[in-house]
Image 1 (cartoon, rainbow, N blue to C red):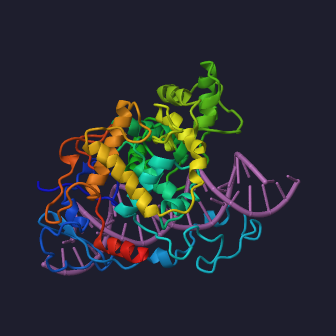
Image 2: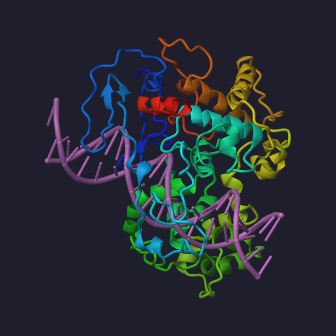
Image 3: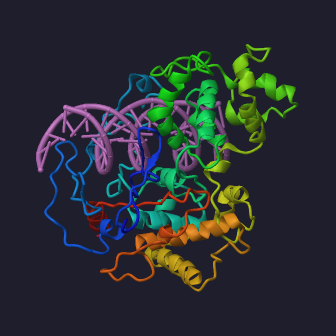
Length: 432
DNA sequence: AATCTCTGCAACCGCAGGTCA
DNA sequence: TTGACCTGCGGTTGCAGAGAT
């Protein structure tokens, strides 16, 4: 198979087939990125009547045609009656009605000029470079300081769910799937809590995996494990689920735990209803061990456990670094600067070191294997984006994906990036 | 070959809750 | 105590790819 990658905005690493396995999308990244027009674009493929911007395979490469702006960029109706009943009214919260959305507070991205939708490689690199250098003490201010035309929320989501170097990519292992199923039986749709028990997995990813195929799997297992007892009824999120505290309390307390498990993976004030471990609890005992181990770890530790290569973050532990959000506070008090120059100088500096064989990027003085992986990850990402190294447009850029995988990642897993040309064009037009 | 349907997932949304002045 | 601000969470949506027709 020629070429490399990708599917940057199409998932972490390709898509799952019906059996739950990943299909690896191998394409010519540089073509997709519009960096190297290896072959003249053929006649545009037929456009789907549905999406209007479907790609078509041409000799292994996907050619994209411009997409119209997403509908939701203009208006996304508020949904879900259950949601409508949640929380405060706009009057209660002191929020004005938002003319576009019709109600509630203004969407944070509503500011004119902010980008929405899929992230471009350039945006990703800016975000990565900024966080690598300054951390993310203030998501709200980050996009402006990083020169991103995004809202803080969007930046945070992108980082948490996709760009964090400590993310585990690839298939859920059977163990992970089993854990998710079991934890869901205990916690219900408490995705963040479930994610806290699965290092490297995000709540969003778990939620997606659950909704796509674990739900079915779990329902098939219902007659057996877990499902018959405590499994929330699918499609009925309001169905009460047994609280973890009730299930775990007997276990954690019996183990003399400090009780933190409840806080970590199932905070609940619900009255305990179980005094004797049920068969389900017994089966979940290994899971509860995990919960207990995580008891003292802040929930967000995993979510923010990215290396913070700043001087204020000297710990070799990413988790420790993660807390460094506050440690870089002063760094965020940046004067208005030419962010373009700043960001790219960051990248250039790092890349120069890497090219010289010096894998030491800022703040990763004595890199642990994990950190080295992160450095490599950044460098590889840059390579993949064609942001450094030979940029001869006529040369397809074979990235290191051909050789090694990401740390903690299956060999087959490739970080992919497919950016429809339209997005690049859109980006360019936005930056003007 | 064209079109339709299903599936997977990134990104969006509003709300809850914590922090701070 | 209150209100503003911010972050995190969970639900939902739209897009794109693959398979079916």
